[in-house]
Structures are given as structure tokens and as C-alpha cells.
Image 1 (spheres, rainbow, N blue to C red):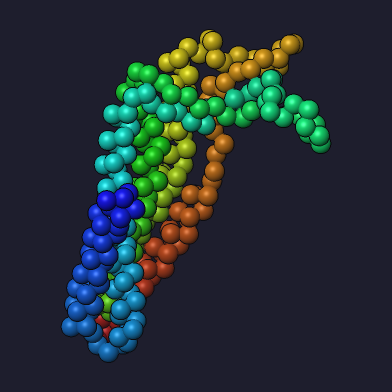
Image 2 (cartoon, rainbow, N blue to C red; image 1 turned 120 degrees about the horizontal axis):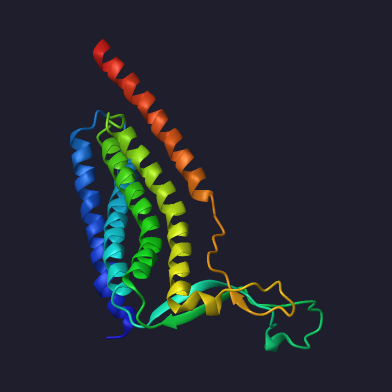
Length: 247
């Protein structure tokens, strides 16, 4: 069996069956609790979204396990994106027209005997965003289920969205810090005095940067957006509770 067929049989087919089963379950339960406000098409779409979110959450859990298996067992360990300040231009570009200057910005290397501390940091870099995706998937699946049952404003749901917002921010920012720290430990393990220096001296020479963090603040923006959604659901929950008391 070729690799493409094996992937379809072992991954795509079970995933499709699971998604179909979850969709049917959510749809049937939702129709039993329905008050007539949702159409059949709306219930099907919401159920599919909820089933897809649950399937994505399962994929996130499998990713956590697979990344751990890879990070803590592979030898040598492949390290990428080490920041490099090179004074030596690439030979490939030597003599090419219209190039005023050239250089290198990153280095990869295969490292033997990488310490457990470095492996844990690389693992954190890989899985922290996955935890954020897992939190969002659980929140979306829960919202889909409550929408099908036509009771979306439950008391605990704004809390789950708030937790997802925190997970997105911590996962996005923490992953970047963990990656920068991991590469610093690699340089320290290999010999900081030989790899890190000052390339501003005359003549300049090639060095690696000990700690390099080009911080991306996009996860903070996503977290703020989710926090506003949590606040909106909190208001809706309070209004629904007051409405139920009036009835």
C-alpha cells in the first residue's frame, strides 16, 4: 500500500466516520430539545461545526503525544532558526548583478546528546500553541452543543471562553520565549565562548546570537478579542437568567 492510500485509510476515513457520528448525535439531541427556533439546515450546520471542533480537539491531543515522542527520542536533534550574524557573504551570490550586499540570518544544525532541559523547551515551543488551539476547539464544540439545544447562555460558558483567551495568549507568547530559551541552551551546550562574540570589531567575523526573540504580539490581540466575546456571553447569561426569573 502506497503512503497516500495508507494515510487515507488510517487517518481520513476514521476521522470522517467520527465526524459523521458526532454530527448525527448532536443533531438528534438538538432536535429533541428544539423549540422550533432553529431550522433543520441550521441545526445540521451547527452540528457539523461542533463535530469538527471535537475532531480538531482530538487531533490536538494526538499532536501533544506525537511531538513528545519525537522531541524526546530523536537523535541527533535537528535545531533550526539559530540567529546568525555573518560577515562572510554567500558564495552563491558572489558576482551577481544588482546585489549591493548579502549575508546569512539563520543556521540549522543536528546536535548529538542534547540535554533534557533543551528538549523540554523545544517541546514547550511546539505544544503551547497546540494547547491554545485545544482550548478554542473545546469552547467551540461546547457552544455548538448549546446552540443546538437552544441554550447558549449557560453560566460556565463565558468562563471557558476566558480560559481559551488566556491559553491563546500564554501559548502564543510563551511558545516564542520557550523557543528563544531553547536555542540559547543549545548554544550554551555547544560552547558559548566559541559561538557567540562581537561582530562589530575590525575585522568583523561570523557569530551566533545567544538570545534572539523577534516577538510577535498577534496572540495578545486574539486573546483580547476572545475576552470581549466572553464578556458578551456573560452579559447574555445574566439577561437570560433574569428572563427565566420573570417567567
